[in-house]
Amino acid sequence: MLIAKNQFGELIEADQAIAGQLFSCPGCQRPLCLKKGQIKMPHFAHRPGMVCDYFSENESQLHLVAKKCLNRILTQVGYQTQLEKVFPEIKQRADLWIQDADGRQLAIEFQQSPISVDKLRQRTAGYHRIGLQVIWILGPNYFRQHLQERTIFKFADANDMIFTWAPSSNQLTVCSCFQKNDLSVLKMQQHQYSPESFLDIFLRGSHHSSQQVQAIRSKSYLRRDLKHMQQQLALKRFSPDMVRLVYEQKHTSPINAPWLVHGGNQAGLKVSNQHWRLAMLLALEAGSETGRLSRNAFIKEFSSESYFYERSWENHLSQQAVVNFLRELSLAGYICLKSAYILVRSLPPWPDNYQQKLALLR
Image (cartoon, rainbow, N blue to C red):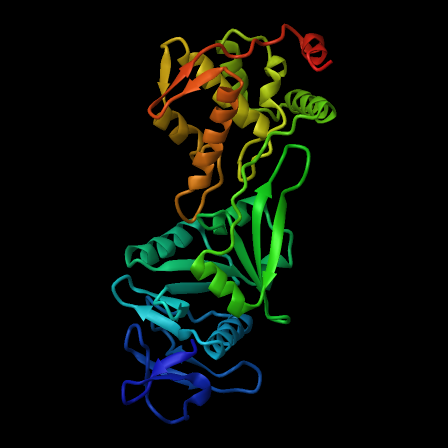
């Protein structure tokens, strides 16, 4: 930790502290030791055996340098800042707290080490309870390696953006507009900002990344996507539960599903786009027998963590992804989409076999 209270109760940074004086933790109020050596930057530490709910003792040198560097840059450009600000009402402390001239506040967490999604949710929810926005900035330990899609969406904010920082260049990067089809790796847009302009953009909401994902409709892609489904079925990698649902709806095979289940481009899914779109189609088929389905219940089911990766906060964009699929069907005339319910008109028929399905592309 970089901040402590001195013997007069004033906050002081470790590199300005004088050895031999008394220091205490701003969170738990217990005594601290000042450590100034030749290798690691000056910092404070709790005495051995002491447990603090606010501060961790295992922060890396990079973590300490990162938050101190960000604090220096943001202070120089006019932000009001405080390193390691303690929030007693939620028993948390932020790596860095900033406020702009308009009074907008933001907590910054610089994440260099692994953290569970439960812990991430707990800390994010804590900030939200006191009306404070928070962004998680990933350090080099994350972006030096190939990030798994699960990890990316764990840290993505409510607008599906993630943030990384390279200390060597003082560049903050916003990653957004994620797309993922079943035949390629995750794609994204990246924009680099200096820390001062980045925070101004974030606090004022000037960075827009929302992008409606469109299904891929080229014939060559659809054929490859169908072949991919065949391979998944042959290798028994396609969900057995999904195959069972297909049979329960009196269909012979997932391969014969209408073409609209192919070509999905939605990122953040635990399952394939084929699986997700087929599951929604089968649910609409089953619901057509009762006349109409609850729109909210349908959106809740197919935007849930049964299909999408766990997030640090509520995933509104997964809900929008379901709405986009429903609108696709509505524009094609298959359903009538109302504010409270979905009325199924006439869903596309299933081809009798593989060759018949291919013939529909000609």
